Image (cartoon, rainbow, N blue to C red; front, side):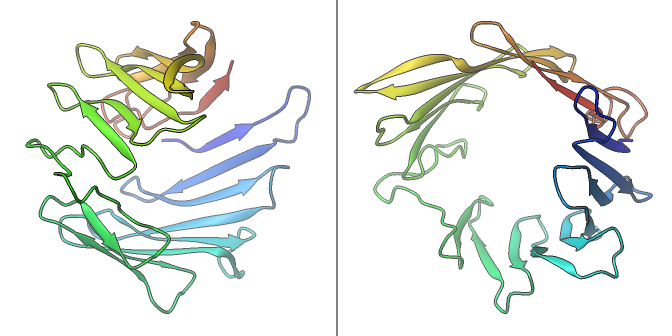
Length: 241
């Protein structure tokens, strides 16, 4: 079980940032305390329902829950029986944000004017397999196994990005190619492209398009007490190349 994550600078004993985690008997994260020089110390407290869905996330000033909450950071969530989010409330707002879903459990609307779900009204938004093909901003393409392989802006302009994805024989994503818009064409960016190196189901290294190391990962024991049986939830160390 992950206890804490600490980031330090060579030669300095005081951490730049540290995250101390507390979990309940079901392994759900209930508390995280932030410390270090990067930010003022504060405490995050999480709440769950009987289906293990996150229902609240509150930030407190300091480490004691008797201190005032640090706005804006008091979230409340409610869900329907299948797990779709029905409402969201921020900092005791009088009217919560309400979400609408269709029979495919896709969000179709919200009462928050700053959060919209846009679909092209002139064409089918999904194919026979239920994959989203377009949303008014991007076009999406999939392979025969319903894996996302391309995201492309519908009306690209200068400095926009297009993404392509590749997978191996067991479905692990092994490459994310990033293209930048130049004039009327796309140019592959080796610096932004990412290639993923796996150990079983754990990503252990990320390379760019020139095979230069960008990040590497050290994995710890997950909820099952092993390295991979329960999704490898323990990630005690991440380093940048």
